[in-house]
Image (cartoon, rainbow, N blue to C red; front, side, top):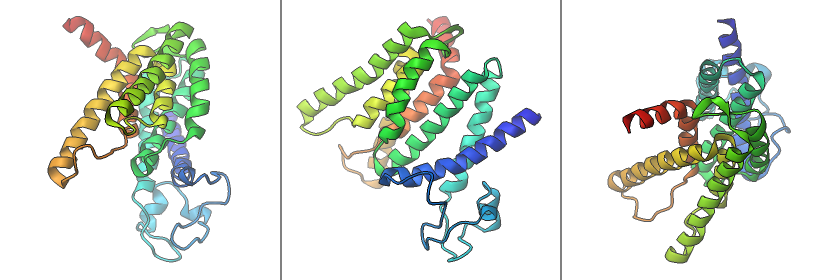
Length: 263
């Protein structure tokens, strides 16, 4: 129990830092300095007002200085990160601390991508560039195959996933622009899927792409029907790919077994 509590607390603390990344990365600002401050009045936030979730509740969701309302995103990101950390711990345990840490960082990266792309329709290179390199290195050496967790992913599967993820989305971007005369796929999505492929392999790319496309399509049609959005209006794809990648990581093996037995 103490292990789960510790990991949950770590997730909350890291989640607080993720909020800084989400707010500052789109503008190219440093995530290290200056210290956290109210986005409305610019007043630095005291350490006792920066306790994950608890401070938001005690302050009733408002800045202590100017009383401006604080975004519900702050406690949501903190709790989401902590909850997913617990799922990672429960799913992969402490068989390998290195593997556990890789997946925790991956989860946090997906959360940052989700919220930044949802609001700004960009996926920062500061996440995807190092992510692509580390994905192939770690996928080739220490990470298990999420669809066959008794086996290592290995170099062949990792590099194949890397090329399948980045290459397929690059082709979609090129063909889509040639047909529709506008960008059909963002460069951030291409690099993100290369990173996902390096970590999860080609099967992870297929499942992530399928789930992301399904979720994106359902959301797009819903926005058209319920809110009058125009056909062809642009929606960010990164959030749906992030959800697909999470499902592939956590349930890839179960889905693979279901598919084999169902067939």
